[in-house]
Amino acid sequence: MSSKPVALVTGGAGFIGSHMVDLLVAQGCAVRVIDNLIGGREANLDDHKSNADVTFDQRDIRELAAPDPLFEDVKYVFHFAGIGDIVPSMEHPVEYMSANVQGTVHVLEAARAAGVEKLVYAASSSCYGLAETPTDESHPIDPQYPYALSKYLGEQSAFHWHQAYGLPVNAIRIFNAYGTRSRTSGAYGAVFGVFLRQKLAGKPFTVVGDGTQSRDFLYASDVAEAFFRAAESSHTGRIYNLGAGNPQPVNRLVELLGGEVIYIPKRPGEPDCTWADITRISDELGWRQKVSFEDGVQRILDNIDYWRNAPLWEPDSIAKATKTWFDMLSERETRANG
Image (cartoon, rainbow, N blue to C red; front, side, top):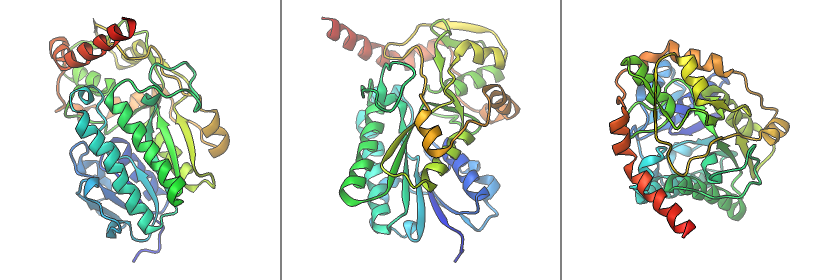
């Protein structure tokens, strides 16, 4: 048995999870990964396949038991597993609640039974809804769609296990993570994946609205660093907002990527700006951004072939994929104003 501290990463073959594995290995940990490979890719762990201290368990987190052998001797749990697409959550709310809430409960119970030292939950800034900016951790909660609700209920479950059972928990509400290894398949989703495939195909970037909307983009390795600090910190029962604290307009992103642009209708229920107030995480954990937006975009461009087999989204297919979103949120706005 390895004498190294053992960390477990749920969703560790996915986008941010695989960057978490990289950091943990660099920090001298033995790492266990659980992932059902629906959203993740085992190839994201290729750099570690020859490392005996990195093991992979292809399972759904809803299959975890308490106690579960996978959690034996685990010091830290980093919980990233779940469904991350926003638009389809309007059509499949039950699956989102099952994976993101009940799945989280299975992880919490297994962690509690194993007596882990700290669990860090990957929460979402979407819980704030159409938030005032910059947004701090005391901002009112107002989920706008089932994905946001499911992630918030998972967060609340984690803190209930902290309160009721003494499980040491911190949660990090991620704003807009980006980087290499982001999802390449499935539903219409994150702007980077959409744009990168369009660039590879020589198609114009489909910019929502007028492109002046801004997002608080943070590179995935900086996200992983924040989670590691939250695990090692003496603080527990804490919520941290995580972004760069420096929102970037979508028009700036397409400028850095380079290419033509076509504008498509703005979607209801989406904020004009996301902007994390990172005072708490900076002060309490000593966390600082390391990868600038420009450097992060260049790292992605250097690895753009990763997205070659991703779906190619164009205005017509985007309109079809987001029709339910438009219809349901427009109806909600009508009801609210009626």
